[in-house]
Image (tube, rainbow, N blue to C red; front, side, top):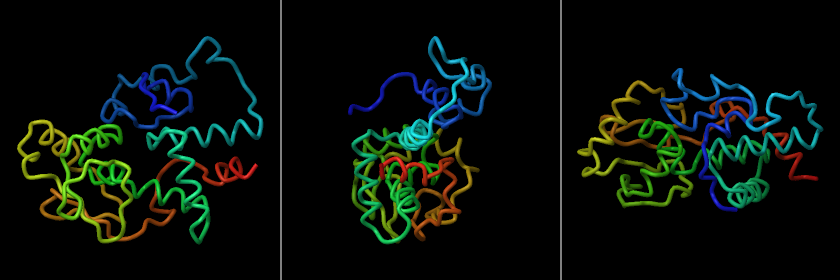
Length: 208
């Protein structure tokens, strides 16, 4: 399935909560969800009673859209989560959090995951000292992500860093080199992942 390229605010309205897909705009009065907090479309304001399957499906869609993934990518990560030891749902979230684009966003090097993905694709970062432009790379403990020296001079990167200078960094990540790089300090626990999803519903959906 191709990546969604339509208005991302519709995705927040469809899932019934902010997914913070547009960075600073999501915190402003211009946020579409704040203005129209109901599902898009002709019947968006109608009352609906979801079935068990619909509830599970919507939770999967919310997680997929939260991290900006296609259906194929998300299912691949679920299969990998099942293969690993431990709780499948928690394994899935840990895998999603370890993606390079998510780590770039969590470190405050981008205002949204979509912006992080674009910055990675445009060669603004190095992974362990080597240039990288693949947002889906899964990072391990000890891996270091650094902004390329040339990119530090760009007005775009300067603006992003200034806007996110005070953004808190998760406990499993660590800023280094005066905030111009970040390191994966540990594997995140479920308590350290603030993604607003019930992963057990996703496991139930794929187990049918």
